[in-house]
Length: 394
Image (cartoon, rainbow, N blue to C red; front, top):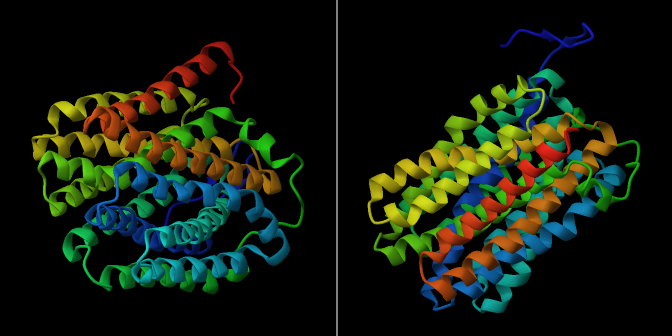
């Protein structure tokens, strides 16, 4: 157990571990299902002869659902309570996850994607609000680093499960739905410790998107890269000559990098007065890693080494961006800003699969890497421009 620290005013800062354990473990169970589901669904569609563009379009439904769910999540939590809203979201996401197995027609996968990702968006928004609200200000980076690490374990276990069980039969769908249902257990146990939203945000939802633009732009890029990368990297790797299992293991290596880096990045960010240069540096790492990918993709081991470091630094955009957001706002404003944060992530998940899938179809297999590099390059330019010309921390 860590010792309490004092804040700048001399008040004791304690981490309330039971409450944080509930929120972190719940969303990590969902992470397992998502980490399993994204490559699983893409491979199944590829086997059915669906084009990369259409696979990207179907994957982009996740972002559409999230963009719709994000503005109403805070209202639902205000009216029905954080824990109760999360429990209903668990049920909807588990049922829709199992529904993919029974949906034989491709068009059916669009409403299923909408239901699944709309519900999981609600879980992410409220879990992260819960975690950010419970974290002491001077240890927020550490707490969010722990959250990101445990979540990364879930995402890494998903592809690992996929490499072990494959894409045939109902078993992978049952495992995914079961993992989501497990998330209900810690939420229910800690339901009385969840934060209470007894007031409404001071601003319109859309204004929160531009209130802390460095954070929201970071999560947009992360969303584009994560959704497009996880969905289409198996196809990119298989077309290069790797087997399904080898492609899934590369995703697992990326997840391991995520696990290794998040706590150190979070702790380091707690020491910074301004987190924006760190965000720009991580985006630059993502840019360099993307440009190296076409040069190394034929060598599995070298690709794995690059993805180990690349995955950790790229995922840090989410962790450090969320910590930057939490350092600026509190209460209902923090809940609404967290919803806007996830909304921008959702916009990224729409743009990413579409842009990356189209780049593959238009320019060939290496279009995957060029599209990733474009997203990171845009953020490097934006973040450095704001740091140089807008010295105020935003």
